[in-house]
Length: 399
Image 1 (tube, rainbow, N blue to C red):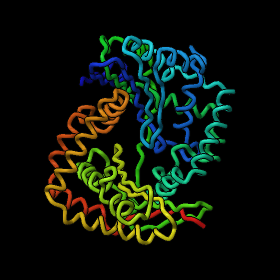
Image 2: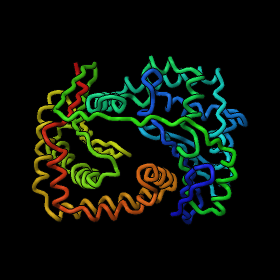
Image 3: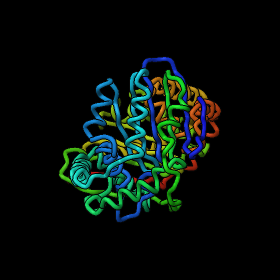
Image 4: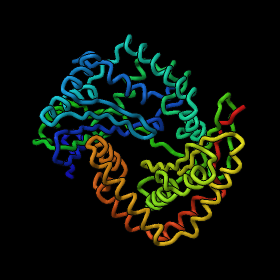
C-alpha cells in the first residue's frame, strides 16, 4: 500500500493486487454531522445528484458507460463521510477513473433532475419509516445521541423539501475540494499516480473552512418506546463508545465477536437456539472516525421483551468471567473475517479511505496487529467502563 498527496492537496492511496478487476473509490470527509439543521440530508441528496448528469454526460450516459464494460458504480452516505466507488475490469481502469472523477468534479445540478430526485428521496424517507428493520435504527440513534449524530442521514420530509439548488451547489463547492477527499485505487494496474493526477488536475482547491462538530455525550440510562401497528417488536439496546482512533475500540470488536458472531455467538445461542425467543438476533459495533456505539438488536414478540432484556444484561455481566481462550477464539474469528473482506477490491478501497480519514491508511494494515495485542485484562476493563447500567434501550413495539 502506498500513499501520496498530490499538488492540489488531494490524497491518493493505492494498493496493487493481482486479479482482473480494479476498484476506484473517492471518500469525501463530509456527512450528516456537518449539515445545518434546515438542510439536513443534503449530503445524501448530493450523493444522489452526482449520478444525475454532469457538464459532460447525461445521467443515462454515466450508467451505461460503466455497465457497458461490465462495471459497477455506487455510493453511500454516512454521518462523517460520503463514499463513491466504481469497480471495472482492469483494462478499463482509465475509463472508470475518468467517469468517477467527472461526477465528483462536474455535477450539473439540473433543476428538473433535482425535483425528480427529490421525489425519489422522499420515497426513501417514507420507506425508512415504513420498514421496522430500518426505522429501529432511526429510533435508536435519536435515543442514544444528542444533536447532529441523532439525526437521520437521509433527512426528514421537511428538510428534504426545503433543500434548493443553491444549497446543493454551495455545500458541494465547500466540501468537495481536494484537501477534503481521498482517492483509493485497489487492483492490478499501472501508472496510477499519473492517471489520477491527469483526471483531477483541474480540480479547484478553494472552499471555505468547515466548523468542527462538537458532540455532547448522553451518559445516563435511557429508555424510548414507540408504539406502531407492527406484528413484531424491535429492540435495540446499546451504549455510546469511542471511535476507531481509540484503543478501546479494538476491545469492543473482541466483545462483538464473542457475543454476536454468526450462529455461534453467545446471544444467538441463548436467545434463539436455546430458548427460541426470536428469529433475528445480532450485535453491532460501529467505530467511526470520532464516535461509536455498541448495540444488541432483536426482533421478537412483545411478550418476550422482558426475558430478552434479562438475557442480554446477563450475558454482558458474564463478560467479567472471560478466559484467555475466549479472547484467542475471538481474535481468530476477527482475523479471518477481516482477511476475507479484503479479497473484495471495492471493500478494500472503502476500507483504505476510511482509515485514511481516521488516522492514516496504513492503519488498515495495523488493524489485525492491534487486535492481536488486546489482552484479557484490556477486555475486562472495557466491559466495566462502557457496558454498564447506563445503556440506552429503544423499542419499536406492537400496539
